[in-house]
Image 1: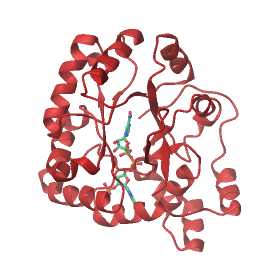
Image 2 (image 1 turned 180 degrees about the horizontal axis):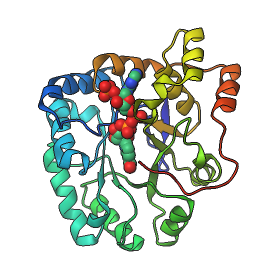
Image 3 (image 1 turned 30 degrees about the vertical axis):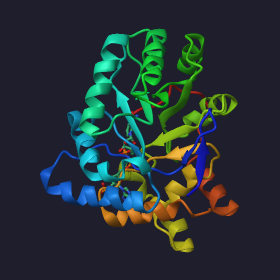
Length: 276
Ligand code: NAP
């Protein structure tokens, strides 16, 4: 499994598993647990969740699915912005740890920026780290200006920024990804197959056909071809998990990359970071 390096030198898998919408429907539960377990067995040991997902239901599902292999997992969760104050972040984190059935998170993210001053959130994250409740902290949906403000507010300990990034969402290439590179912070691409919408794209379908892959695999391989990029596709079925894992080993040719570059041109003008 390809790895990505955090600012403190720790290496983590470049390809993980998302969990948004998991644990919300009883009929899908067994399949989702099997998919997550299979993904971990295949090396996708980086797991992303959030207190928001199903109001804690995704965290509870992960606890059930992966409790027995907790030590193999790089476990990430995210706090609501309204919980990002010093007092509330401790409680939010405790709730998350309880649902996940663990005593620590490997990475805790602020889900998006809210009204709590960034300096207070930085202190709250650092306090959780000092208490051993989290090993790393980071942010999500932060644009370049937000990252600069975070650093100015004392947030030099930030490990990563989880952002919307895929073939159809290339805005971060204009300046955010370069800023993160300059600060040795990997980016974490969420919705790397655009919530499934990219799998019917004609260009991806054509390339996939010629190289014996699937459109989803081409979309994932494109995200992962960038150094310092982590992708966290969500897959609720065994077949999708297996497909996604294989995408981690798929290397696109320079011809295919050029074709994709032409079909999914990066924006010419800077626009605010998109989010889902
Ligand atoms: P995504 O991973 O781009 O797409 C998930 C959808 O694609 C599901 O419907 C899944 O179907 C389908 N899919 C997965 N693999 C496939 C394959 N090989 N072939 C065909 N279809 C496939 O979208 P996402 O769930 O929005 O994003 C991924 C993760 O990022 C989330 O789960 C969450 O952990 C995180 N996220 C974070 C934020 C944030 O604000 N920080 C926002 C959005 C998402 P099945 O489920 O049927 O397999």
